[in-house]
Length: 141
Image (cartoon, rainbow, N blue to C red; front, top):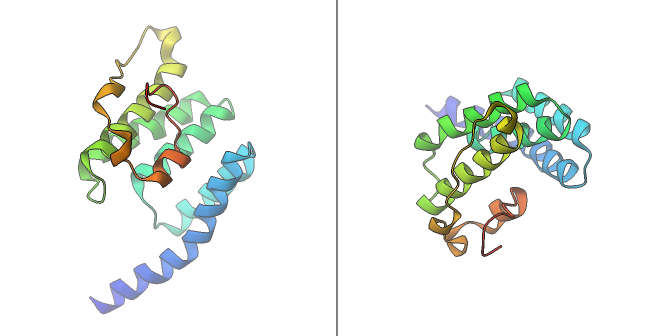
């Protein structure tokens, strides 16, 4: 038990700087650099599945890799029911963000998710989530 906890702490310390850099690169439009850091994180193995998949999906979208993007965005949605550290508004926010990116890519195939942003109270969504995953289609943005 103690070994597992220590291993988790060490892995977390190794991935945290990569995560921060990946977010920073993505926010500055350096998507290829962000992708490379995310790949390194994936090899190490400790990260928030939902947030990782949302960022990887976004980065792949920006790089024009729609197929890879969609894989990660759908994986983020699949992980939402298991996400224990987020409140209901944050879960709805992440889902809306993923659906928005999916809609941008799948409109040619006639697929379209209805996104109801009115049910998301932005005041209950962590500021870091709003900054890292801007959902500008929200009416109160």
